[in-house]
Length: 206
Image (cartoon, rainbow, N blue to C red; front, top):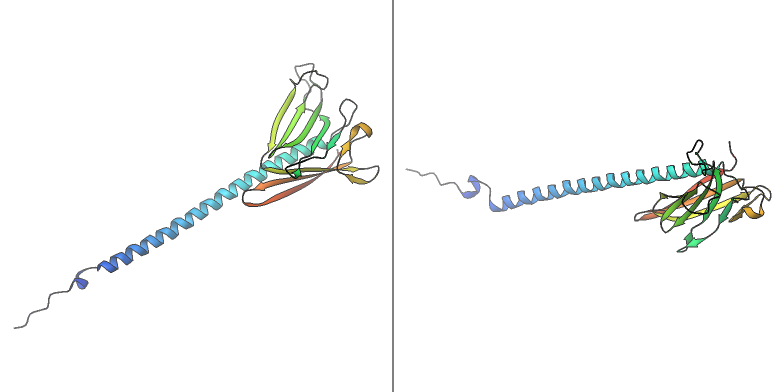
């Protein structure tokens, strides 16, 4: 009479080694999946941040083009371009008169001509506007932050008479505004190298 041999543990189920290998594989797969998801989310956030920065730059340059293209130089507000540096980077300032959207304003002190100043302070590009050119106080001065993460703000001016590009412009000794302007705006891009955006502006363009 023969007896069937009892089944071994390896035949009745998984061994401990097989279970550990399966758990390790699942852990590796989870790590890969979550790692890919993390990289993807970071890429999406970086793309959104870059897109937001680009929109700010476009809006800033659009405003500057609009105001500079119709800028004027008068005795009450000469066209000024000051060449300066801060922390070893360009930090120019531009001051001029331009037409403001103040027709029909309630205050009789408000004028259509507005004094505008662009300047860099730290990592910010600022715009100052003064609606009352003849006021003795600073109540009519408005300050707006145009952009952040600004490393450099460099401006050059084309003199139509001498046909030369200049680093400064002093409207007190010149009869008119520059014929054209070159704006160079250098922006920080996180860990990446700073990027410089250049924009030409024709002054007096219709």
